[in-house]
Length: 92
Image 1 (cartoon, helix red, strand yellow):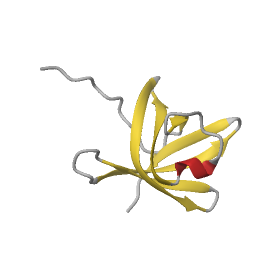
Image 2 (tube, helix red, strand yellow):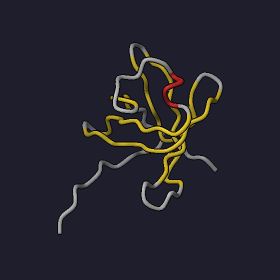
Image 3 (cartoon, one colour):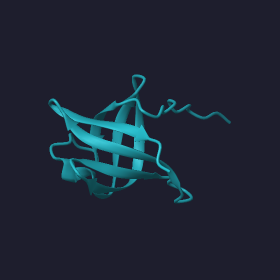
């Protein structure tokens, strides 16, 4: 049995967002509530599923394990230039 390796997510490294809920992101509100988005991590797509909420001028997004529903990591998402960036942040 083989599996596809996922790229390593590094805390504190901004990643460009490729899509949110399968479409090009246009507004920050698309990242709130239950949704998913794909970021570019080291040139590879990385799918983030979970729930986001507004935090000042960005969204704080809690990535969840799709099978067990546990928290995996926290992301901050914000508009940048002509798109959006997401960054895994250490949250204690």
